[in-house]
Length: 76
Image 1: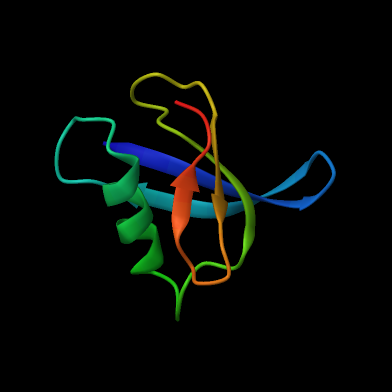
Image 2 (image 1 turned 180 degrees about the vertical axis):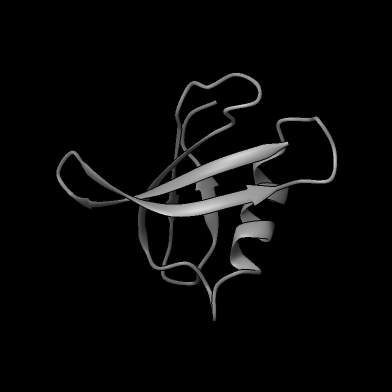
């Protein structure tokens, strides 16, 4: 499944980070985050994120990355 990721850069403003593809058709955000991180040189920057799957349910889901680079979905 294809996932689109954006990071909040200011109140209400989002910057596109890129796309990530997972191996199956399940909405697996953890696998999508791992795929996105594989394209970065290091962990994702701390902050607010949103993701969606244009191939499936295209509703934005929101998450946060902490100081350690760990992604946590805050809505489901």
